[in-house]
Image (cartoon, rainbow, N blue to C red):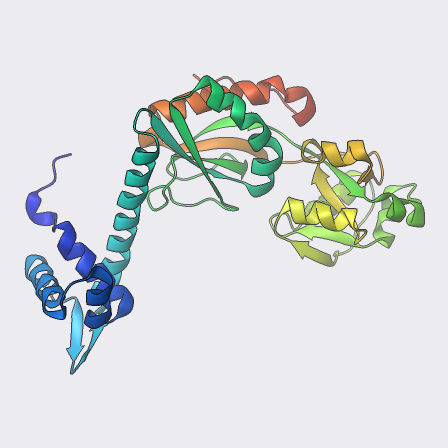
Length: 309
C-alpha cells in the first residue's frame, strides 16, 4: 500500500512530540533529546502545522495535551515502540527472520521451552522472542506474529491451528492425601480447594462429572497454573491441574492424584496468528514444527492434532 508522504511526519518531529507528551514538559523533552527548548518547540509547531490542529494546550509555562493530542500521542508511542522492536530484532538476526510469539506462562515454561532448542537447531536463521499473555489480544495493537491460545477456537481477526486437548486431574501433596484419605469424589469437598481465575467453574464441572453435587465452592485464587501447582505441593489444598504439565511433579512424588478421576477440559490449545502473517516464513516453519510436536506427543496430551492445509 502506497502511503502519501504528507501523512508521514519526520522521525525528529514525532520523537520531539512523543517526549514532550510523555513528560508534559518541553524542558524535560529537550533534556532527554539533547536539544534546546526552542528546537523542541519548533518541531512540535511544525508537526501541528502538518496536522492542521494544536496538540497541546499552552498555559503560561506549562503544556497539556488536547484530547485528540492524547490519542495521537498514544498511537505514535506505540508506532515508535514497534519500529524500535523491529530494528532491534533485525540487528539481532540480520540473516534470518524473527518470530514474536505470545505464550501462556506455564505452557511456555513446562512444555514449549524444553522443546524449543530442537526448533532453533533445525531453523538456524530464525530468532524466537517470547512474551507471556494470559488472555486474547488484538494482533493489530500487539507486537506478536502468533500466540498460544487455550480456549475455544474463537479469536477475532485471527487464523488458528489446533494443537492439543487437555486432561486435568485433582492433585495434592502426599501429606494432604494421607490426612483426608479420599475415597470418593464428595470426599474432596472436605479439603481446601485451589481455583484458577481463568477457570472459575472447573471444580464445579469436575464434581458434576463424577456424580458429586457441589454447592458454590470457595478457596484460594491463582492466576497461573505454576502458582497453583506450587501451592498444592506446599500443602495448601487440592488443585485441578493439566496432567501433561505436572508429569515431573507426579514422577517425583511432589504431587499425587487425590483420586484417579480425570476430566477432559472443554477448551483446547491452539496456535493463532493474524491473517496477514499467514505466509511469513518464520511463522510457517514454527507452525509446521509445533503441529508435528503436539502430534508426536498426542498420547500424553489428548486428542490427535488436525493437519494444517
